[in-house]
Length: 241
Image (cartoon, rainbow, N blue to C red; front, side, top):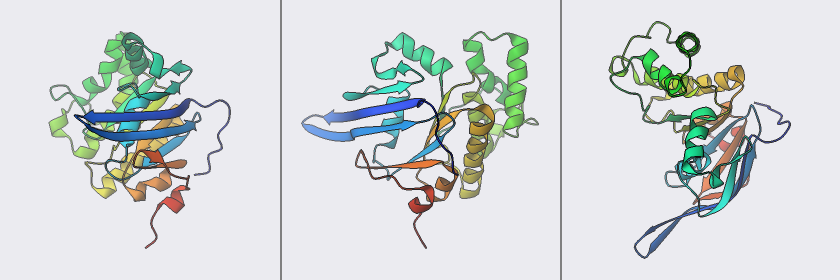
């Protein structure tokens, strides 16, 4: 993808450092990580297990706080916000997609997608219309009344993507969204994320360990032992055979 960034970054990460301590032992999860992401970009974060991908995404989404550095999302200094403002940010500005789907088992696909809009007290008619649009967007318009256990893994992740988009977030954070899926289904989900970034005008930060999915990103950030390594294009990031 040849996406040309323009304007101010939607996401700015500056000098992030995170250290986990267990007794006398210290594990440095992030080492002075800095980068920016512009509106409309899909940026992939790659790295081996334990490289710091999830820790980074948690800092960006305000789910955890760094020991040093700062994160700015859509003008909000995430690392300085009190918990009440972080809740607002995660409700209105940032959408999350997780590896484990995170759906509510007793709710239908439509009801799961509607949860974020219930929290913002979106009027019923508007909520129902948005649910229909989103489930059609992810190809599940015929599965609106099915519960998670009645859906395949790929279908569950599609519901999770639709739910993440419910309140029209500006930044979509996806942590290994294809990790529990087979390669073919995983590629479909990554293609879906690529499509919704374009159609919904969303900016996306996606952690993935699958080299075959990196070609769908505009840029690839690579973490090694908590530090960013020099940038490579998606094509360069894929090992040659």
